[in-house]
Length: 243
Image (cartoon, rainbow, N blue to C red; front, side):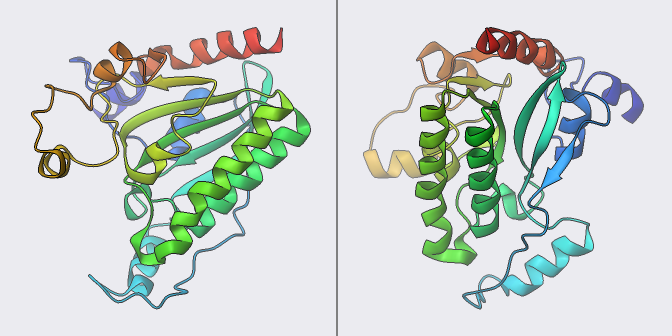
């Protein structure tokens, strides 16, 4: 069954898109053996000595034991023979939260793309900013968006691929300001949960208002693309931007 799912890009015959990790995205989208990691030497630290709900040091050690060192991987690759810079969120690492290191990896990747006139593609899967790093994590939203501004001014394209889930500070900053915003079918996209919004606004919320399909119908994303069609769509878009 696992082999069958892998052949179908981790999409069920019913159309459900399973969450996948960065390495699977690299294998799915990039030309063979073209991926080159950047920023892997940047490592997270417990700067605030966070204790609740459990010590942050334990969280980092547990993730390291699983071979994970941050919620985002960054690097360069070829897609259809065209060189791009990629930033890929990993939801397995503290819910894909935006942290000091994740923000720095993103910013460096964006600035490299701007300087080299390369397209930047981000694949999001995030619960927002990392509470264990407090305001230092929140500041990454502004830093990353400043780097996105430099990319825009360089004329290099920025493409965002929103997967399930994309929430919090990630959706409020970098995920929805691309030249092209692409969502996977059925992906949950929003700022916070429906219950919190309902409690804050006392409003009746539309059915499925945080789904990719609702976002498409209301102009928040530009297209909803099944995963097995994503690589050819990216090749098409990259070709259009190149021209």
